[in-house]
Length: 370
Image (tube, rainbow, N blue to C red):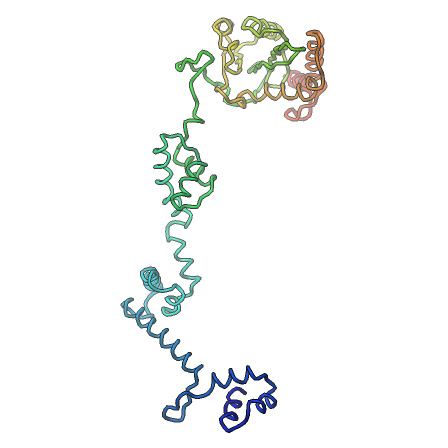
């Protein structure tokens, strides 16, 4: 229709008549006339329009580009796919990947897939290999002070976009632990050579009662006086075997509570006593006393309350379910509530770890079977 309109125009038709005949506006008719009017008539009767000229010019540019690619590749398109991919990688800095793939007969999806994978390693493995030396160097330059978050920030400044978890994984694989989270060998006297070993190692399951006891100290105000609550728990059934309160939790006070539990339990053999590294538990008096009784002593690592999670959990329950709901005016009020809660905890409160049995019921059930 466009060519017919142009022929009629050349035959003498007016633009208005053409618009009526073909049902187009004047601007459209003029555009068609401009695009399809011949600019020259070569031999053999062929007519070249501006549109043809533009198309031929574009094709010529494409052919020149393809010829340059062929010239610089050094071989024909019938060569293997691996050779074609190697040429694309080599020339991708000078030509677009689109025209390279089109010229060599390679799908772009094939090229990108092969580029991102290796015959031996995945793309993420290659990425890790690139990042590991950088993470190592940043960690060393920080004098082993930078953690995953700070290393991620420095990598970002170097042009590497990576998540904190990714850096943390690489650090773990390379055993890079920053100074802030390393175990620091200190005690309450700040002597670096004092170190008390953790022999329980968060293994809170025992085969029978009186194998491992755990202990901890918590604090509650009576008016404006801070009182200490000391508890001793048998890990087997989580039974509270001793508990008491005092204005001052001294080593002698803790020793007295331990002795009461030790005698009530008929001086068990092979007992391990676990606690944090509070001054009462690390005092010479207390350690000497347990050593004389043949009790093995174990300590949580400094600053790691999860090493004594059972005792910590007991105090959390006591405060959440009882102590935080009361204001105490006298020591007797506090003592009454603490002892009532210990009785409730041992005999009435089901424990999920024990299959919803109470601690005393679980212990009695074990003793009946043995």
